[in-house]
Image (cartoon, rainbow, N blue to C red; front, side, top):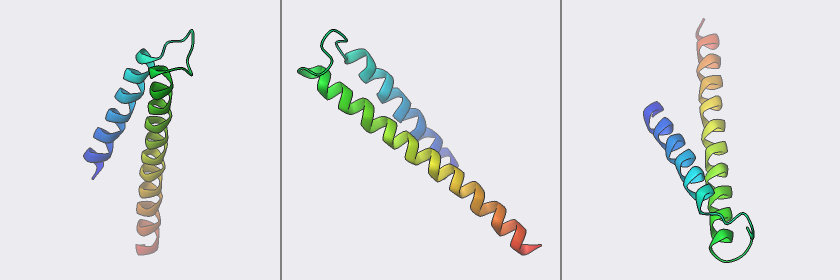
Length: 69
């Protein structure tokens, strides 16, 4: 599961960077640039969710260890 989450984090970062190059910064909310902005926002949301999942798994593991001892 750790490997899958890390791969998905890398894919999300890659999509954000790729879409960042697709934006026309002179008019960022017109045509294809708007689609690229939406893609950046979606990939950053996915990244945030994956980071929250990683942190929650670490907390869960610590609580499990603490309750065993």
